[in-house]
Structure formats: structure tokens, C-alpha cells
Length: 406
Image 1 (cartoon, one colour):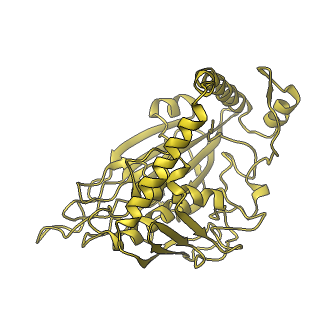
Image 2 (cartoon, rainbow, N blue to C red):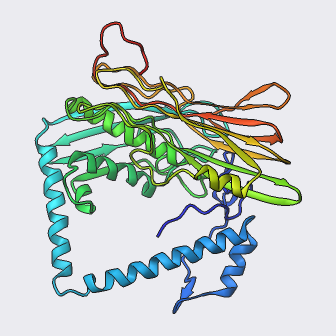
Image 3 (cartoon, one colour):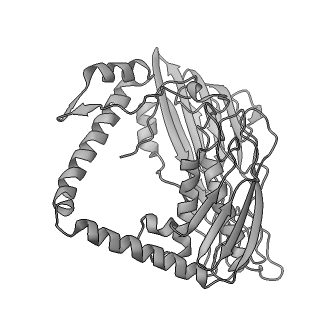
């Protein structure tokens, strides 16, 4: 049971510091330890967790909700796992998934394909962080070579091999979407990484901004494979899930909340890309405006699709989204973790790229501060934070005379 907790310590509220240079700055690190025993929480450990959080009541409540979810899941799973043929039946599904993935690979001619992309800096430096994917397919097996990716960064965009495996798994599921979702899907795949790079960093590399690296890798894998099977693969997704942490103090009370903002899917051979959706390795929903406004001195002034941000094509890319937040009282900190501010999501099969993303603070004094793709900024009552996420790439050549964006 996995949850994005609002705050577990670290150098910034929300525990997503865009300028962290080590994992110790990102939150409280706890080796595997038992929190619940016979249905009761370890009081000493719970006190330790609360002491390191800026929102201890929220943390304790979320942990209790996770435990309740696990307890309910156990009750549902026990009868199934207790059946005599459970392990044999599970192995049948795993074997079937592997066979489906190998069949999909075998249907494509052998070859080697590659694709390059880049992150918009690492939170410390604005310099691009190159990503390079090479696919080598032979028979019913595939080798994914990421050894050409950039050296690990000082900033927190690094991703462990475990996180990178999420992109590999998504790619494998796209190869044979009809297969059951289990590790049989990835059995035909070999992953090569170079220790000391952004996709295989050495401890204590900062990693809290790894999400967009993983998302761009998923896109790069699909983009490289589209060269082998262009009629079957969609254009790249927008490649960004903005992670936003807003915090402040008003009337002597501290508040923190984290928001995850979706973008868009790329156009595909079978139709246009979805708008305002979290694609590939996305696993979170947005926070309802009513919840935000009830817990913080904020007004959510706009939630909308970013019309015109999808790349044009026979099937256009989906549109990103627009979110605007006004701080009503006090002052606080914006921790913004975005992507695609300078590198546009590419189209496929002749489709146009999607529009880049932007973020800015419209100050109460009439000035505007444009935010970098990874940024921390202070704001005050009357300021408005506006975020516009990138659009997806288009698929197929646009209609003659059409616009660059849909």
C-alpha cells in the first residue's frame, strides 16, 4: 500500500526540495521496521514520525488509513491465497504473459533503434540532462541499453534502477496490452545501466524529482520502438506530471499541501490523445479544489484544459491543463517540480510536437516571475501561481493548411 505523504521532514515543506543534493535532505530515512503489531501501532515509532513532520496529524491519519487498507486487503486475499491450486494458477498467468510479450517481439523484424531526449535541468543547474535509449531486438528477446544517459546529477532528478524499472514495465505492457499484468511481461527484457548515471545513481544521490525522468524514459522507449513498429505505437505523451508543494503560515497557523498535476497523452494510430490525463507511470489523482480551499488560505481560480497545446496531426495530441492558485492570506513557499519547459513532446509519423509547459507567479504588485522547470519561490497574499502543462505530440501528418497545435 503506497501513499504520497504530505510531509516526512527534509529541508522544505512537503518534502520535495527541488534543490536537494543528497537523499538525507529529502526527508526522514527509515530502514524497514514494523510499525504495526497485532493491529496496534508502535507508539515510540509513531512519535518519531510525528516529530519529523510539519503536518503530524495528517501523517498519522494517512498511516492509519494505509493500515486499514492493508487489513481489508488481507481479509480479501486470504481465502484466495489459501486455495490449493493458487500458486499453480498464478504461474499459469505469469507464463501466459511472458508468451504474449515474446510473441509481440517476435512479430517485429530484428534491429536496433535509439532515441534521445533531455530533462530541463536538475534543479541546481538549468543545463539539459541528456537521456539516451537504445533498443536491440533479436528474436523474441529485447535488450534496453541506458548506459548512454547522463552522469548522475547534484540535483534530485536521479532515479534508482527500481524506479527506472517502472518505465520498463509500462513499455512491456504496451508491447502486449492484452497480457495479464505481472512480471512475465518483463521476462524477455534485459536492462543495461551504467552505475553512477541518472538511471543508476550512487548513494546518497538526491532522487525526489525522479518522476519526470521516469516519464521521459517511458516516452523514449515508446519512441524508439515506434521506429520498428510505426503503425502500432502512439506519439510521445507530454512527459510530465507536475509535483507542486505549497506551504505557508497565516493567522499563526502553518499549512502544507501537495498537488500532482497531469498533462496529456500523445495522438495514436487509433485516435487523438487524451487531454488532462496522467499517462504511463502516473499513479495519482489531482486534489479537489474544495479540499484545497478548506485546508489552506487559497482560492483555486482556474482549472481548465489548455486549449491549443496538443500537437497537430492526423490524430492530434491531447491538451495539457491550466491551474491557478491565489494566496489569500499570509506568506509561504512554492516548491514547483515541472518539466518540458524547453524540450517539446515530439510528434510521431509526421505529427507536430506538443506545446511546452510554463509556470509563473503573477505578483500582487503587477510584476510577473517566470519559474524554471524546477524552482522554489516565496509568495505573499494576493499573488497568483499559474501552471500550464505541456501538450502531447500529434500522430500522423496534419491536414494540409492546418495549425501546428490542436
